[in-house]
Image 1 (cartoon, rainbow, N blue to C red):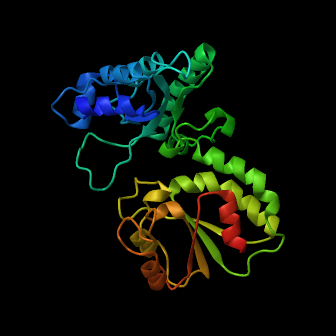
Image 2 (cartoon, helix red, strand yellow):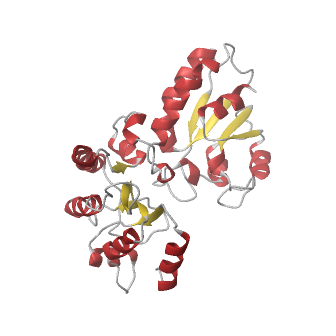
Length: 309
């Protein structure tokens, strides 16, 4: 959707790196997936930005039966061919592969979620491509979303696999980074448990990432802090990201007064206000649940501080 003046402004301001949704390099398929009538030839757009000196982080939202399989392989191959000789010139420097998330409101009967077996096959394909890229230019280049490991019921890779975490905002490597940071601050955990019945709220994906840390934390402090994975009743159970939980999800999942205190990650709320995605406020939810709620940043040290302080 860039106009000529947009390209000119990007060049004048030297805007880089840029984040570009690709999905597929097949123009006709991309046009179909985006539901647009005009040209969706993304490679030409990428090349023009590269010629302007832009470094590009790209994203592929993967939909089973649409842009997976041979189409995914084609997209990864084309994007990796645009990797820069060095970071002083333009090029595609990373690609994220994220499985499609479907809300209960979507109406396309052909859209569905990946099965565990399919998610495993996607990971195998990506990991083969990572090995190839490392041997050619020293970077894994393409990174699968944490959710693919959850769907495939596979363990998360170590943090080193994600290099400098170029796609963290797309949910790439968040579990590995959290666990790495937890190892650095776990010795700060007090030896005595909190004197209250406490639950940490997370989504289905978050439970897979946090569970080992919470087990270790309870062993260290002698506590019984509960990690409570809440299903998304607002957008539908297929939406499993913690940051997409709403106030009504908590109201539907919890019995009023069932805990002395709840601990929420800050990404469940609006950036600058205590408001959930369904416009319920933190105060309203706390009042209806008859429980105080503490909000903490999404880091292990912030979680530990909120639990014990």
